[in-house]
Length: 426
Ligand SMILES: Cc1cc2nc3c(=O)[nH]c(=O)nc-3n(C[C@H](O)[C@H](O)[C@H](O)COP(=O)(O)OP(=O)(O)OC[C@H]3O[C@@H](n4cnc5c(N)ncnc54)[C@H](O)[C@@H]3O)c2cc1C
Image (tube, rainbow, N blue to C red; front, side):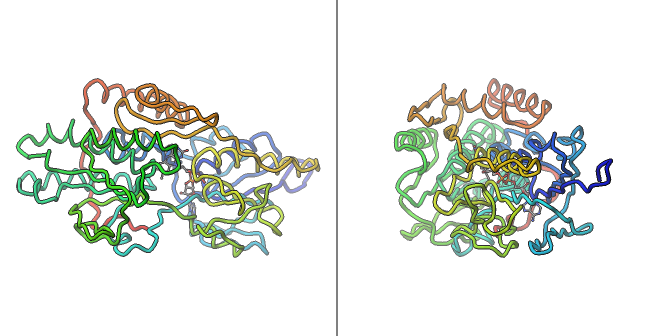
């Protein structure tokens, strides 16, 4: 409530990912009370999850406490809770803890979850790579298999150490590149008596090339580099089913592995369905040109969970960040009774994927490409710049320098209980 006794405009933001954070920060000077709700008390920098899974970085290098981000922004309250229901008619958001939150404006930015596409066995036997818990579980599982094999050297040759990655988009390519480096440069030295060369990293992609959203030349580079480094790349063959210790391909081939990671795609978070409004095929909330939910004034959706039916934007960080800022500005204009801004326009800044040491591909909107060491340096620089928090940036820079100079990966302690079953993919 303001000094004049007028209730301040209440904004509820669901999700402290790229979109939610961008929106909350852009509202910092506006006369609004913001509540940002997230199931975790930290923001996850998903682009570096594969480095956690392959022991290059620690979990807390890629997460940042949400309360720390808003410590100095007095108009933001943080609630760590899971959103369980949204009532658009009454304008309230219910969470698993605390009273329901009433809003005047709602920004839904709950992101995406892994999509098994109904392939049998994926939900039961494959790891996802969407959250920090997923990344830590993959790392733990891989390292634990090596420790087991220390007393059973035959395991290296019977496939227990193999890792199969299903899905050859940027996440699959980055994970495969990071995993083969972990095998060759670290685990082969840690487990000298094991024949680690027999342990395979296999990357499976259903369409006929890796990095399907990139230019064909980038796909060729990725496949060439990964193959040269020892990854078996299989393209043009789908996954028929996943078993506890194998991936069965649509051509009948059976890839034996104890660690299976599903990076084949995502669908919108189940929060989308809580709105009871039309969804796109991938379960995303259909938004209008101003990122609003049609017929629901004051309700917006941004990032991976939203799609403008005609032109769905890619599910990457920039559309979420730019969308979050745009919606914050739209709310501010509305409060000042200014005419609405024009429709949201996404500025494509290009795409990048790293393949491993000295190798990455980068593509710019003007059609130019970078690959090799130059692309790799650009990738490293950009990820440091976008990473949240000085401490995280300094830690990551130090870890990368150390890893680069020594070929070592320090983040390979086995602590806590190992997950019995892989993290469930909804
Ligand atoms: C492994 C991986 C690598 C990636 N690499 C890149 C890359 O290199 N470059 C790039 O641009 N993009 C990359 N992406 C994609 C990028 O991370 C996403 O597009 C981006 O995070 C989307 O932002 P968002 O705000 O929509 O959602 P998110 O950042 O996913 O945030 C959603 C938030 O909502 C919260 N949430 C969800 N459901 C609930 C609920 N019921 N209650 C409360 N909170 C909830 C989640 O905890 C999460 O914090 C990568 C993604 C992954 C998984």
